Length: 250
Picture (tube, rainbow, N blue to C red):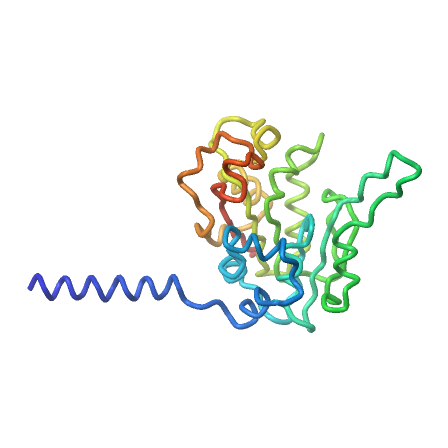
């Protein structure tokens, strides 16, 4: 009897492991393998787990995806290839700060340079304040990575109005995915001092806009993170404890 129970447990564990290690969809695998991705991006793949992340997000060919505050475009390139030529990625980025030196013009934002590449022609940059989120067509997914906490650092920023604008930008059934660095609860200033946020705060704010919690992924969790260091601290950078929450518009 014991051997039979042991065999059952081994089989169950194998099935469970297989489920966890199941291959992402072909469009996601191809996006990660894209030869146009810069070496600086691919060097971060082991830490950022792009295939597993996009698999959880559920990006499919032909989708309309909104990426909030894309930065240098790490996820933008991946999303572009994952939605394919029939899909669209609206990259919402804040207006750049004008140069204080007349001899040095304001540099072109990285996302505009990326979108000008023929290989990423389905990327449509939109220069706008996050508070005024608006896209030409309703989206299937709104995605933001490591940026939600920064919105809390904008003076007088209305988080409730912002999350409601995300709700309105989505199709019914569309999903809002937030990936960010985990903070321990209790300190409201941690978004500024450590660039982290309590996941419970995110969930409360987003659900208040009318979203339904649709799940989370722990692929970027790191219980060894002490949670007391700035995310740019060399001892923890690229290895912070991170959460990925998915919310659905009813």
